[in-house]
Amino acid sequence: MRTTDGDGDGLVDQRDVTQPRNAFRIKAYSDVDLRVEKRLPFGRHSASVLVEVFNLLNRANVLNVNAVDGPGFGTTIDYLAGREVQFGVRFFFNER
Image (cartoon, rainbow, N blue to C red; front, side, top):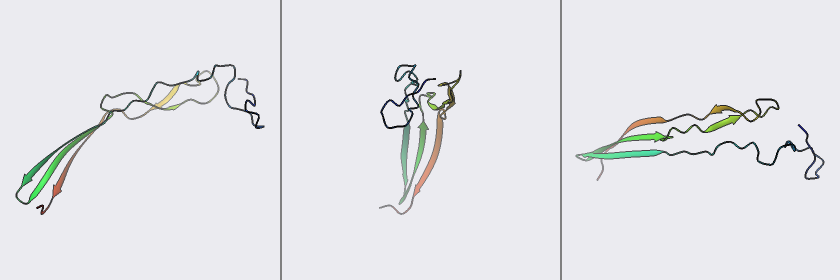
């Protein structure tokens, strides 16, 4: 890897100048979340039942890549969590 002081500030840049700019891009991040809630009244009280889904499309979004120089440079180390589902109930007392 060959580095230079590309901007003239006296500090060596960490960009590998033997590679074109933006050569080590990872795939785009994409996330779709969904929340569905249904309110059920009973007397002066009510409750709501809800379902939340995070990363609905179960996309493998990159969390971390190998930044150490060598043959594994730029490879994915870790991914964000896959699809997650959460259920919940809320109670509302003495509503008018």
